[in-house]
Image (cartoon, rainbow, N blue to C red; front, side, top):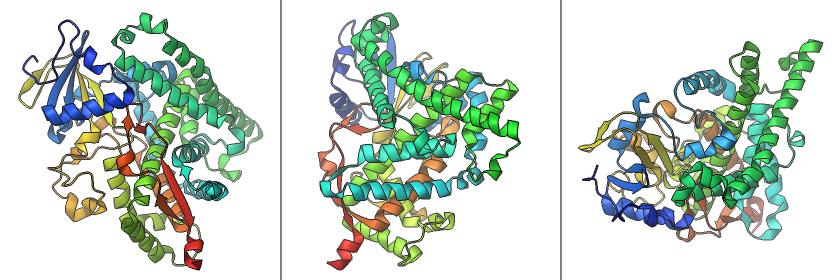
Length: 471
């Protein structure tokens, strides 16, 4: 380990001083160190040793097998909120829950949600229309609310009017992210007792009831509705309702005794966070980037024109499958702006990476953000080039050079649904509005958080397309 390169170390403290920075400076310095030290380097702090990886072959070695899929820090910092849900759990519990939830994400099941996606797309377009007089719109809160409503209705069976305090819930998620980052940059916060006495811990404890009550109320409402339906003999398919597959699966498993109420809440909390926040992040950055790429936006709109013509009809599943260029744009946007810019694993056994023997009990951080910007894989990596993802251009490319949904056994269970959601919302927006730039790519300052965030709003101007035609 001592031969592995890395920033200069301070005796006894290791790299703790180097890591004690603001969230934006941490993000910046991690990228600088990637450029200086290359594919594999190390950071040490207190009793924690971390190896940082940026090369697809090294990433594949870690992600492609269950041998190295253990999670620890920083995911354990989320246990107060997510418990041992799918994002955080390990071993038998992770295998059991993954197997339990996988049927909820089969394509035939996801297709049942499509009409709900279309309804929420129309509601989002109305919201945008109501805010046009602002001149510019911060798309992050706009899209966050839309994706959260979609997740609640499709997976949990909760209609918008049944969901209280949605803005407070989103704000509480952001506060949890701030607390996690503070634990990472302040090494003394790694000690649970010390952290528990801090103001940051009090902030975390203050928002946890909001987060848990939000999902608890949805679960209880669904449980009561199922019980009423059972008592009266009403079947879900006879009440004009999309079956909330994920929550119903969990409640069915509860009846079998394979999961308890706490376990249901853990998985619902996990799914809502991962499903809405990461998808909203992806959409927000894509809208910003497409607004700054007028020629590419025109090409997307030409594709949509070929599919829909002048019709104002809602899309179908078959229409989504025809949006090949839009799909390339989504992939290119996720390459540049992966919703989860870092992944982490904890080694429970020794492994050899790039000629170095890495002992067990070492943390391995995978830098998705810079893996996606490797100029050897993606020439001129900062440029937005959707053609990178045409079939002829992806042939022979290491699949671990593109991991916006992670990869291997612990890949994102909901990635197909996320892609369907992004396609539906983006195509709906671009059919009605032309996106014009306010925030520029060069303006973005990224900060360390649970998902990719910036230190300022991401603003876009929406120009109605009928207005463009009339002028």
